[in-house]
Image (spheres, helix red, strand yellow):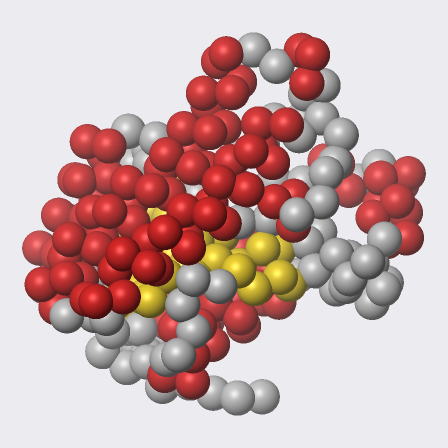
Length: 252
């Protein structure tokens, strides 16, 4: 196992109190990164931050809704006030509401796209404004293989995750002059709270497994390992990329 040293860096992880976000935050903390965890629920953010503090890094929990730009600005200000810098942004906050396309309401569309795509963009924008002052930074946006392959009942989710892939490319292009690297990770089927109910049904689990050459559902740590690599100097020449981590689902 490769161990990276990211000592002294500061990372902000949205949706970081559980699942993929917490796994990334924990692995970054083990590499020496100070962490700010964002969750819509203050108690969950603080509980996650407290658990990371045991890894000999400074960690804080912040409540906020990334679909609200005023919240994003408040969150970034809190991070700068606390740590005096921001080196890494993990745009992980996301929501999925499985609904047949013909039944999608304006509210469902706005909720999903507002969190997954709008939230991602404005978090990146606010973080980049600080990173430009520092002449460098790393932004990782969590997309999905649903940006690549279609699944039923996921039209707004697929739209938001596909949008993340293209926005990632644009931001990488625009911000390269400031030494800011922007990449995306597209997870496949991962055991998280977001899809626990879906995977609890045997027919859904078996269907997913039949599409995965490695024949297992992914773990949040599978995504966290890739995220830490992209944050490391070993990935210093990688920007604008979307890295698929899906057990082979999208090979064909």
